[in-house]
Each structure stands twice: as C-alpha cells, then as structure tokens.
Image (tube, rainbow, N blue to C red):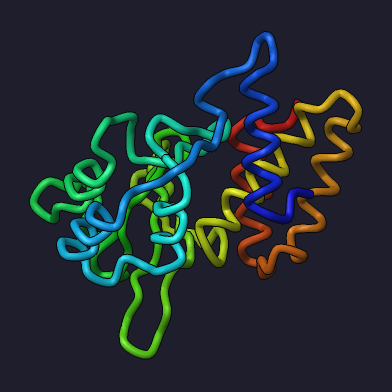
Length: 203
C-alpha cells in the first residue's frame, strides 16, 4: 500500500523510466503557480482546498495512473480545461454535477470524476464518480475522501499488478481489503471493488 504522495511520486518516476515505461505515468512537479490557482478559484468558487493543494504540487497535464486520468484531458492550459468542463452551458452532465455541488476535474476511462465543493461550514474535497458508460441514467458514487487519497488508492492498485515481486491478483485483493487504512469508508471501498472489476484491472 502506498501511503504518501512522496512515495507515489517516486514510484511513478521509476515506472516511467523503465524500458517500456510510459511518460504519462510520472507525477511531475511543480504544479500550478499562485496566479493560475487564483484564476481557477475566481471562476469556480468553492474549489476544494485539498484539490488545490494537489494542483499546486503536481503538474497533472497529460498525467494518468492507468485508467485514472488526473486531468479532464491532455492540454497545455489545465485551468482552461477545468473551466470549460464546468461551464454550465457546455457541460453535458451539469444536471448531475451542479445540484450536488460538484466540479468535474478528472476521469476514469470515459466517466467523469468530480470533487465536492467547499461550502460554508462544510469542507469539500470528497471524490465522486459519475458512471455514464452503459447506463441510461448516470449514477453518482463516492470514491475517496480526497483527490490525494484517490491517487494513492490507484497507485497502490497499479503497484500490486506492476511489480513482479508482488503476488498479482492476491496482492490486489489485499490492497482492496486494506483501503480503510487510507480513510475510506465501506461505501467508498465497495465502489473501488466495483470499478476495479468492470475496468479489467485484475490481471
């Protein structure tokens, strides 16, 4: 289990430098400068502080952890992509996102991944998935208490199937069983079991 962002960054750098490694796996620094963060929060009030911390630390453009795309899509201007994806007039899923005080910030395959807005007296940051593929009516599901934790979970699952020294499927099952250590409740843990199964994550 990967328990810190420092460890996750180090491991993704190792993966990217392997002979058949992919650059898109590597978590790079630095993230967005203060002026760009202000540009984002001025346009999207309530963008959660826990997510802004990730944006300030890592360059999420064109970065993915397997099926978990850490930005809406590869682009030079991440802030502009976030603004466009959350424009009520152009957002395909605004009827599900806006009433639930969510911002779309990433994706799992073709499904949007959102973060809950900070509201007065109620800090946001919880990661919410929006399942759309193969469904007549999209479904919201709770994934993680924060974007950082969602990154750690995905990295841990990748580590379980990537490292030949680990036990493959049994190690993956162990990671799923230990998700409570990262602060996930039962509903969130069940959501990871579900998406791991439908994504073909198991080797």
